[in-house]
Image (tube, rainbow, N blue to C red; front, side, top):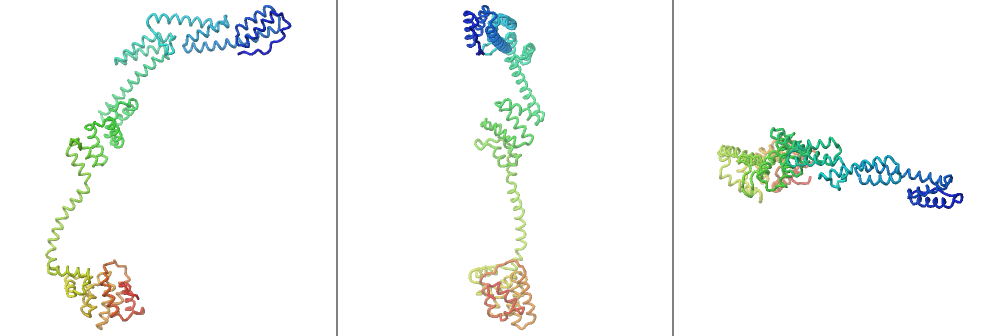
Length: 488
């Protein structure tokens, strides 16, 4: 919409010119430049010298020039876009507004020539779908016959001939969209076929990495071709890329769960290589049908690898048992000689008495067993039992053979020193000193039952008279009393 700056001074011109100028102003304000220009020319014809009319004419011509330039740009745009009908409409508007416009005349002639050529193509049966937006594109009409032939060759599998025809179209019309799309489609299929050939050839030749590279592209290009997924899984398996192979095998199995015969042998091989021998055994045989997917040798080998620790233990046991039997056989005679069956019965009774009431009631039995076994603990126990009943000399003999047990040595030396003291023998102080040293040594703990402590406390209360810390005997007494539970 054009706006008139100001037209005034109508009183200085004739009424007829004034009326034409007023109408020119009205049409100009409405944007009707042709009518505004028509009334302006009428006014100028009556009053050619009028300054107001000349000013109005300048504004109208300026607006017409601006509109003409705009229509020319629009026409160029539609012509470049091959929108001939719209360009023709704009060019006609341009020539109505500016009948002498050279650009409009030239381009309108070109448009009419294009329409004539299109009519000729239509008469020959070559039609362009209007929805394509190029129904007035001459280059497209000239290329349609070649493209139709190219599609025919492509549909019949002759991609070489189809590509030749497409190249002819693109040589004359490099921007032909239909030709470019068909060319891309042909090249895409050729590229995929090249990948397929490359993948299969590399796999057969043992070039697994090259095969995987080609298969990656194929799977990306053709995600519905699942056979490439299986082939890639096999290639990963041959490269010992177990995680990648497992991912592809399971992805394929999720799509084709009925392909047990195809997949289970690979699963068993895969899990065997991954040291999952339990799963390798599971996939080597169908638990439902009992069908073997791997050889019995493979299954037994998997079983051995899975239970290898148990087999080793079993072999060790089988080797050790004969050795044990042999040693037992060799030592049996010595055992019977040292501890005959009759004494074994006595030893059993002694053990029961020790656990229930203490063996002091079975002192002869204890002495006999202690002499037979000659162990420090039994010698010590027999010694303190004899000590308690007053058999000092007998107690001394047994106590003398109990010093080798580090846990009871401190008490044994003390009670042995008491026997020497009571019998009037020398070196009792030496025994008390040894008791102190043994009691303060770091010894391994042993069995110190309550009935033994009871006997030891009775001896301490009945025979130990020296308890001061100024003597070895007194210090030894305090250490032994601490072990048996006596307060110092």
